[in-house]
Amino acid sequence: RARQAPTAPYTASARARQLDPACACDMSLGYSIIRQFLRHFVVDVFFRQVDIVGGARIPKTGPVIFVANHNNQFVDPIMLIAHINRVLRFLIAAKSLHRRVIGSLARMLRAIGVQRPQDLARKGVGTVSAEEGSVIITGEGTSFTKDLQPGAKIKIGDAEHSVKSVESDTQCIATAAARCTAKGAAYKVLPRVDQSAMYNQVHQALMSGDCIGIFPEGGSHDQASMLELKPGVAIMALGAMQAGADTVQIVPCGLNYFDPHAFRSRVIIEFGEPFEVPQATLELYRTNKRAAVAELMTTVDDAMHSVMPGAQNWEELQSFLTMRALYKTRGKIMSAEETLKMNKMFALSRKRLLDDTRMSGLMDEVHEYVELLRAAGLRDRDVRLSLVRDTRQILLTVSAAVQLILLSPITIPVFILFLPVSILTRTLAERERRTALANSTVKLTGADVVASYKLIVGMVFVPLYNMTLAILVTLYLHLDFLWFLFIYFVGLLIVWYIGLLACDRSVRCWRRVRAMLLFWGCASTATILQQFLVERRKALQEKVRAFVKEIAPEMSQDLEEQKHIQARTITCDIERLQSEGVLPGNPGVAPGNGGGGLEEPLLPKADEAASEGNYCVVQ
Image 1: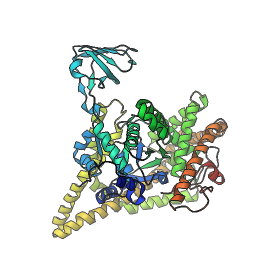
Image 2: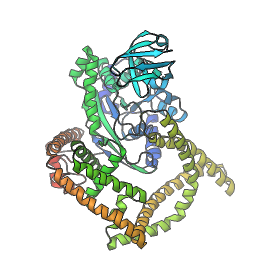
Image 3: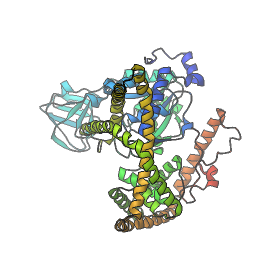
Image 4: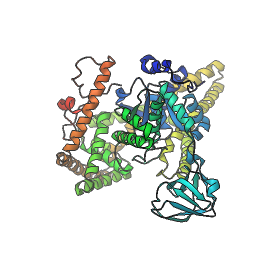
């Protein structure tokens, strides 16, 4: 049974639990079991690779609030719970607590329910009108005195208007002027919700040494850039400190999905440098809450942007990823940290050179190349490998073909067995995607809910499906009940695990063999691909590298700023690790470069890593 949120006042024992590492990292057996289950049977199954950057920055003691972007609905909290070795209590929409699977799991993980106004929205009676620049909202056939109260919101289209006062049944005053004109429009009423009980739970959790996880964007979405942040995180941090908690630390988290809803895709989780809520801000909060919250949210917003790629949309992000691949030297294996760093640096270049024809022209060419790759069903890696026709590549291709044949007795039966699960999860996830898209004003395609519902359906259907298979095998072979238990709990798990590894390997082998057959096999196909992809890639690679060398002096100021920020990060990381006894030695000596730098202007060289901020991440 899930341990309930503490309700006792802040005491010396609670304070001791905060300061004692053994207590602060303690978690109940039930929480630990669920956490390990989520990590090994959910995350490691659905995702092929999860890389952690900045794991050593996670504070081991004291009250902490983790703030993260929200592009993958229920998958996002699962990712953080699975990879943060502390009790992490997430805020979750109250309506989600009533879901059968997610609600039960959330209660066991001691999630805190939040009643959101948008979940209680109802269609308003009559129609409303608002003039741009005016705070007066007038209605026709409305009953404002009955339906509205100060603090409620009127939603007209995508615009929300907070109600300051209700003058009559047909007129109310908004807190801010309307940004656009609306006449005779339908509207929704979002009631004011008293969140004091929720804030009290958060304050008690922070005072008892637990961590809070929150997505300040408010809800999940499928946009590449962040939505406007809600001030809840600042109110929670300042309110907890005012209630008696020690200084609250806030840790920004960047969840970087390479293909959010695809099975066996890759994720990089970046933990930024934690920062403490300043005491000066707390003092300001006692006298001017609005100013203090705004001041802290500015810091939170900057911290969140530091762990985000910086692209404005998915097409731009894909172009950055392709430019990184074009810029990379042959044989270079980039670490997760270097991958994120290059993405951010290209985004910074795009931002600084927004009106520069060099940047816009290059982005257009890269985007066209990406579209050609998508049309051909190929990846940039396939085109790059086709440029190298040496003995080693031929042997690797032959080896891939042999592995594909040898693994087929495993992959084909497993594929057939897994087909019903795949069809069901895809069908139900697609239905949920359409529903979520219809009910949202911020989603582009609703892709942020797909992976979540694949996982939910899988967690319910796979055990039932395995039970059916175990019963059929037991009856067919005339085995007893003990054999049924062995087949269900051991045999099928082994089959699925081996099958998963075999299918992973087979997919990689098939991609290599298919690409090489297209480029080296059929002469007519090879000629077309040579003209449209290979030659284009060669030209683009030269342009990308020349562009980087050209703009490096122009970006020196930003690069120096990044170096100073990273140097401070290194110092904090080293001091933390040395205080924990993980690293011996002189605090002034920086650790070496874990992945090695590119011999190019954009990334530091290996022998400069210690002074320029490339560091090993201790996980």
